[in-house]
Amino acid sequence: MTIENVIQTKLQDGLAIEHLNIENESHMHSGPAMDTHFKVTLVSDDFGGKRLVQRHQMIYGLLAQEMQNPIHALSMHLFTAQEWQDRAGSVAASPKCMGGSKADK
Image (tube, rainbow, N blue to C red; front, side):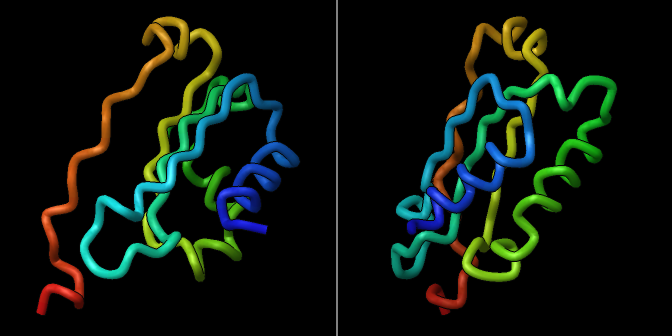
């Protein structure tokens, strides 16, 4: 099972999801292209009444094992259904990596 599938399964098992998009952004980072950098866009009314840090904590809790290894970076865009609708269902593109890895040295 790929790490993307693991992320999807754990998030779907832990939250009532209305929309989920997982992007492997490892190719945008310096060093060998490995499955370590991900962007998650997730819409769930389970986030209702929760501050952004609480939403992030929910995701980190569900993916605790994967955050130890193999996930190195996880960009999270977490919304309720109303927030997602207000944004017209989109998030900004991720910036290109500026370096700074051990591979750059």
